[in-house]
Length: 212
Image 1 (cartoon, rainbow, N blue to C red):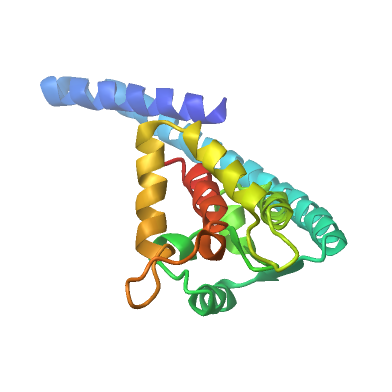
Image 2: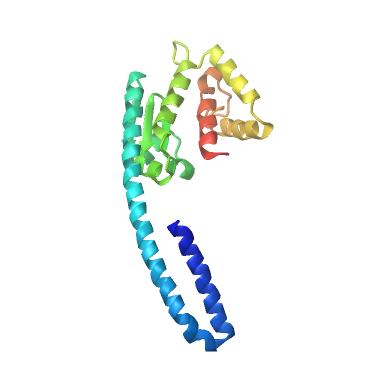
């Protein structure tokens, strides 16, 4: 409501200033109203700032509560869960060979059985559910693996089924990233499916988060 009133006031100020430009004799008549509107907007701005700070404080409390809940669930699933700053987040991405400008701005990611949450990014993005999102991601990945820790035959079939339900455009986006980053070894030789197929879950999750 305050924001809307502020916008209306700015529009009125523009109208009055244009009227003065068209007819300078109206300056004295309109100057008092312009001054009043500017003072009103200053007070509205101060009020908006107070409300914003209250919202930010409450949102931080909600975020911390959600992350604490996600950490408990992660522990039950034998998943590591670490809330980190940007420097540690960057290092984790580098160690996982996932460092890109886009990824370093993300709110969270999972590598192996370890979840990393960038709280600062999560707050900036208002991403309240990032912790539980990554926990579910980890649960899904683990449920598709066999006793050897690699993706099972059933897991491969399930992922193929998931891919088949996507549009051709979405399939192309995901497949291109798989081919570029996961499908081949350093010598350009294609890996076995059980060595890279779980990354379809990673890429699909990233695509959903980034709304590609």
